[in-house]
Image 1 (tube, chains in turn yellow, brown):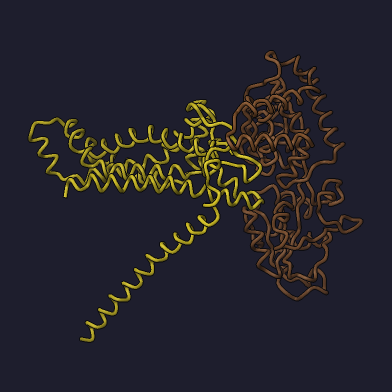
Image 2 (tube, rainbow over the protein chains, first blue to last red):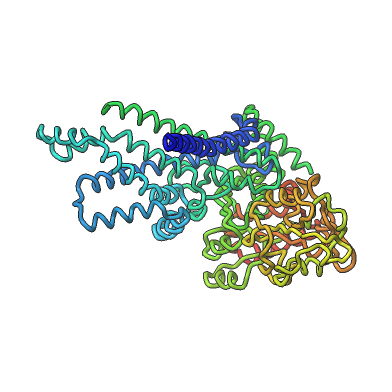
Length: 284
Length: 336
């Protein structure tokens, strides 16, 4: 009797503790977003999106930074997805489980934890200087691709692991080759999980500043890139630049640019959730 | 200045997406105006008349960035086809690229160091240093602080020098009549040029100070810190004071003759000493082969006075700009 009451009390205490822990994150997010919205929402209009950077806060816009971010986003996706997914498929389906694959696995997990500025230094030396790409959108995208590859590889492997073995066996039983099984069965079945990983990785890439500053992304560019070899700026750099200005108008601009950046990541996460739900139902 | 008025008009039209013809006409008027006095040079260098194109790469100090950004923004109205790009690698990072010949112009919040000079010499890079504006470092306390009216450099040194760490902790250790209360120090992060300059001017050695103060790379944090603490003392760029006058009290510094507060006038004429510093741009001599760089630098010197005020800095005295312009002219002649 007494011990039952005790257990119930513990149960209840744990529930409150869990509730409190959940609320911390939620309250912080609400306060943060609320604060940003109050500061920045009034600033956002069409001219804010289409104007060039300016010394006058009220005239300044994010056009070149936004375009730079979009370029970086698509080019990074274009480079990182095929490589990352292929590596994930190979590791999960082809590679033999031996000490080499063990080392590979540990290394990939470790790479996911390397500070992003290190990737920036690597990108500066390899892409900007040795490959002579300059401080271009391409060099930036290659650097960010390296940064998010481990995330995509790990996500791909997890998604493939989650595909029921019966699907694979059935495919082989019908005489399909390994490639046919992967292409027609495993990839479609794990697509939701892979896509979730890819989009979360890209959301990270779009918010990165440090590696791009090292690679040589600029703070003021009066033109949007029109090819991968052009110089560029990105939203986080624009935000960082505005926050460090003394005039209050720039702080509001920074808040507005943060809203746009948040909007981009929210939309991307939304897409990820949508596809995960859509494609996961097939196997329930 | 008729230039800024026209320019304002130009942007208003641009913003409201009215017909582009007017914009072009204004741009051309500006272009013709600006070319009138530089006709001799333009003829010599540019085949297609006066419309220049090309890319000018600028990198370096984030302190100088707002001035160069403002100049680049205005330069677009004169030479819309010239692409000026500006990075913020910091003064040191900027010189690194400059000495490799990767940039045309380097922004710097301090003069070039011997090591950087050597790096330039190694790659046969000749350059010219130009002063473009001044920045004042403001010393600030909380508005509730009613005892401090001024500091001498010696007092500031006594507070900030490395030996003060753990020892100079109370206001009455500086002057006995000040309260027996803890002194709370705020200053920019040790990686900033502002910190370097302050320590150089006050302590006598760049980068050398006590470590037990609240440091932040974000000057807004310093403003908040000083504004919320009666016993605080801090320093940062004058522009941050100008934007937060109601929350802070500016303290004058004794320059050896009298107590001076930093203002547009005292920083510009040099009486606010030693806490005002010049901001520089460095121009690579091989870039002089590009007529758009000459045009840009001349435009920079001509407009830096007006534009530096816009972004919170202080213009040089007019005759100093004339001197910079003369220096640049000689530099261009000798590197042709």
